[in-house]
Length: 159
Picture (cartoon, rainbow, N blue to C red):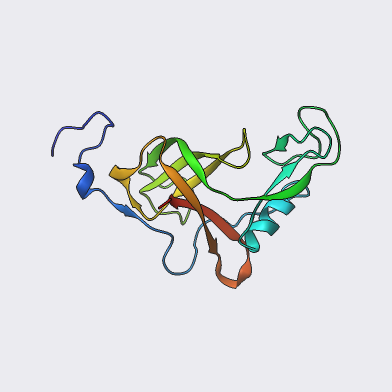
């Protein structure tokens, strides 16, 4: 086996796994919305990224919560955003952390371009593991679970 490179990988990047959205029926956990996160999950079902925003000071509120973390106003409301962003950081998961979510997969932090200060935890797809880079521009990809139970949000390279 070759020695690991600077990222700890044992294969040249061009031979690493291609990441794709799940094929076949979803076997992973199904998100359950609560009163604060319901607008986010409802937006995903419409293939729209909706982030809460304070009506008073216009601060983005994510993760969703009942009040603005800046001014404590109790009126955050969902606002659609473009969804394009930039990979802030990532890691490659090579073991199964959730039943039904088969490794390898990339867990990434994505900074949204249209919602200053919002950073989402997500998975990257439609890219080879070795091509993922910090600073890589990405766009949203919506994945509907069978039976309409929920819609998952992935990101893929933009352009």
